[in-house]
Length: 347
Ligand SMILES: [Zn+2]
Ligand SMILES: [Zn+2]
Image (cartoon, rainbow, N blue to C red):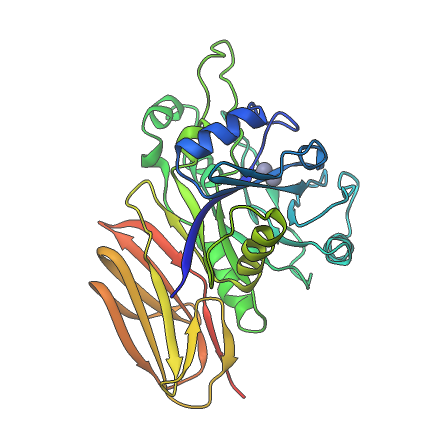
């Protein structure tokens, strides 16, 4: 039995280059019925120092930092109490290690970059150093990146009105890189919005992908063993960050349909329970199970290859070889849910 909480990760406020005040962000996330938001302003933890981190009625606001070297290799760092200087960095291993030494952890942001919104076509913000180690994971699916990558000067207005039509799913390079790295180490995938809600030039009252919309799109759902206290920031923050670090979470594009209740789990030898994110030794037959809240196309992948593909609400399968197993779910052909893997390693 798990307690599931939905969060929007990677969000910018007026403290960096987003348009929203913290009050507006808290308000809009609450209206979108999010359980938590992780704010990641560029190179600042000022919202933390100004006392915004904590419970705001039913919304937990956590403050991270998007460490933003000029090169465009950005890193989402969580659980920091001290700002990290990012601008001039070129040694990304050193950056990752500094976050870890300060008790934080982090994710490589938009690893395959994006065109710069709203109208420019230059592709930038790519992660370039794949030799790095000791980071927790990568941002597999970012709404902003997906949207801007599929929009050009001529289709911009159309996709501003029908934003969903530009959404194609996580970039195949990101999924491939995730599968490749997962062969050798534990690595967590997260989904995000990279919300900025910028105003249109000349029409400042129109917002480009506004917060209230983005908060209903790509969410990361965490699975906890106990409910959040909703009173202790310290404890609840620890629980959410522990689940993210462990990969006890999945990514869903919830505007298509509410993915609450999705589960990818299993057991080894009928006793040792497994859940997404878990890494264990494969020494005897395992059973894996997938539950989806609505009838959809369930794809089970082993080491990046589809090994089972069915239209159903659940899937039970016996596994007789080691591998990294993860699930993708498509609803009426549209990418909907991406689980973290269960890692069954050779002893
Ligand atoms: Zn960035
Ligand atoms: Zn960002």
